[in-house]
Image 1 (tube, rainbow, N blue to C red):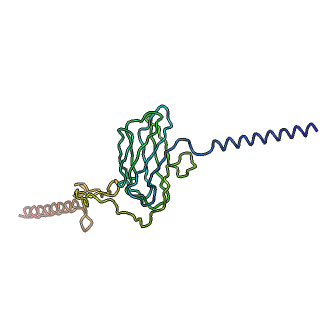
Image 2: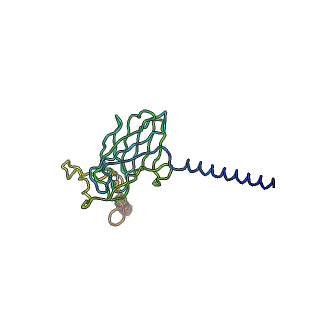
Length: 242
């Protein structure tokens, strides 16, 4: 009977330990406490001139945030994004796939808050802004996971359905259309051009028969030499006969 009671107490202890462990796992599960938040008062598909605010939470008590790099979601071109407000001294730079805002480090432990203005939001249900957050000590937090329950989720802006009658606006005008004289692409992607041939390569360009100019010059010189040699031999033989 004593043995049965001891077995019962052991089973009860195991049950309590298992429950405590499960509770601890549930309490510690979930995304990291710090992250980047995004919000907008006009979070609606196809809305125009929308200001979007970002709050990059600080995870360091010794280093301040100096740079934030954002990859724009599909449907938003870098050329259609303008800088709103941000930390003092920070500047906005467009990239091929997004933009960067950077400047003097904000105070350690203080969040980096800034905003941008988008010409028009795409017709979508949500927009994910993958973000790289860099500190003055060189550390970079990568908020790029599309799974909101992940450890490093990207900031996601939920959009309401488009208003009745809302339509996509035309792309941003080029510089030629605005009278500045030089055409500009909708995004700052470097223009791809065919490399020009060097003078040497052009001089050695092949003609229609597949031979280079240098080859034809060599053939011509060879013909002249052969002809000259033939004339010399004929004259020499003639002199010898005389």
